[in-house]
Length: 72
Image 1 (cartoon, rainbow, N blue to C red):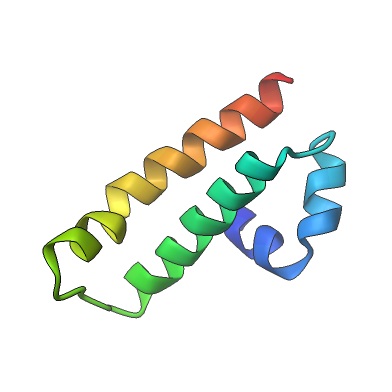
Image 2 (image 1 turned 90 degrees about the vertical axis):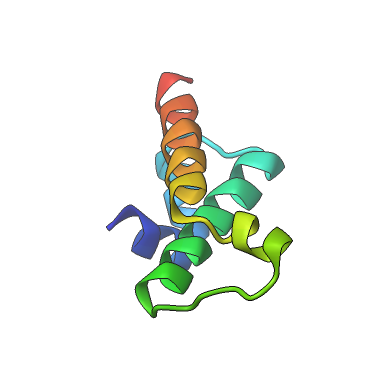
């Protein structure tokens, strides 16, 4: 649900959270896009791109950034 809010209305999501820095925004978009990539069943072929599209990495980034935003 939070991923949908980030993609549908990122400005409203950032305003509701009290502001988002550039790095937080990029991280949330990365984590959201990674969730979509994982949901459609995409499997990367290269070793480096497998690490970049590894779902637990996206979950960790998303949870970390959301926790930082709520603690502010």
